[in-house]
Length: 359
Ligand SMILES: [Zn+2]
Image (cartoon, rainbow, N blue to C red; front, side, top):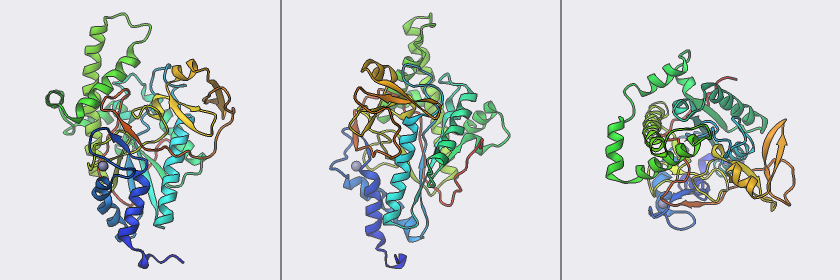
């Protein structure tokens, strides 16, 4: 029998953090080196070791899975598909590997942030609700026992959607003027601001738009500030609610900072996420993420599963649905974003019964 008392916590903590860091999403030029960055390992080791010393489950908090992009050139529709399923399977498998090293194991609380800013990115509240509900169903269907979802709806039960966002931002998050000043000073926020602005431009440049390009760019820059301000507010709220969690992020992170950037899926573009893309079977047993239009241009064909469009298969790939996670390998992001990064997260809390809604 495995005896916790004999566990060398320090060594086990290093093993656990290595399991996470081999999937690290890095910001190029920010100092990370080696297959597993020793500086990042040292930086995050204590939080893991502290949970282990107390014998509790390691709680990771990941703001992610907000809602599908409204752009039909990027995604198959408003509901989660194989792109999300592969990412969930990967997160579950990561927790399983951690449990092999440390039997109390780990959990990932997905803090879905769709409700936080969907009104700014042109997605209806109804589609946010449907997406979150399907994520919960997907977690159940694939038998993931170490994943849970938490949303803004869980924070203020009974409030309507506009009230939820108003209560979130009351006294939290920066003002637009503060963000403008921060962008002018340079730094990491510039990359996120540019990435989100570019994402907005992609999604709002629809055939029906009749205004000028310059006016649309001004509008998108304003929206980007709004998205960042709401994300910061969500970040602050999560830090209040879950102070003892280990923070993960879908965005590339600089070396040795508060959050660990985590790659959710194989992708040639480290900024691409499952909700801005489609899963593509490359035919060699692996999946990658691509924008839908790019997959179609590459000659990929649509595969359906569970009665809905699921993913694309490149010529030569089988039209079947995988049941195993494919672990993404480490990726370094350029300092220019090509897709949005619409989520942020704080520091963690234990013993959270992964809350869900709309079950
Ligand atoms: Zn590092």
